[in-house]
Image 1 (cartoon, one colour):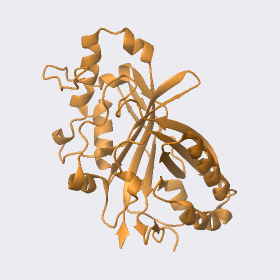
Image 2 (tube, rainbow, N blue to C red):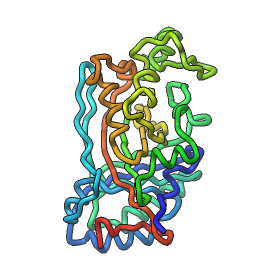
Image 3 (cartoon, one colour):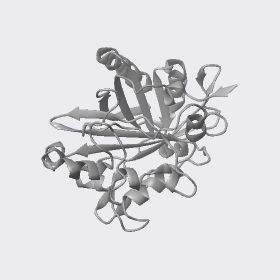
Image 4 (spheres, helix red, strand yellow):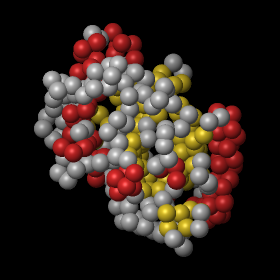
Length: 287
């Protein structure tokens, strides 16, 4: 029986994580690398295939496409689509380092690591702006319905956002609340928040059809910069893309206030294959 990869819906957000992004280096070596990947992947990792890899294999996954470059009035969302994505998660940073090295070696020479970004849990699942993240996530059966497609596959949307934490901290408390749309401290949604508030821009039930996703985002920090590795799972990319277009002002000309204090650096879409008998089921792309 096919099933989804357990890390997609495992709660809470992990303590530590590593996002690994790979490009295809040698298509001839890919079959051996994928065989190794099936043996190496377990419950502590979520694997995602990008459109460049699926196309290189001469295959097609219904619903998979490259991340779009979405540009709006005051909002820029770049596309940095890669071939393969690996989300390692756990509790020990050193163990994740060693596991990521094992993945990198197992995937060579077919794949070349082009980006590695570490994530971590802040408090009980907060963004570095000190506001709780993922408050409106669906749960239980609703989470499965939102995040998992027929057959057990899932679609992951990933963006690395870089925050201007100093600029955000310098704003008056009410202005910070109005950017997010929630009151700092008790996380209550503000009824009088402006239309630019992030919560209002992304209210999942306000879309037609409703745009529910399961967010598994985590903060990152390196070389004096910091922000959020945004990660959302859906049964398709449509819900995420509808939210992104509205945030960017393409729906009604109103740009999400989040762009005032943060900017996306990357953007990628990935198909997360289902499991069969506890292992990745790659028959859709690699018979």
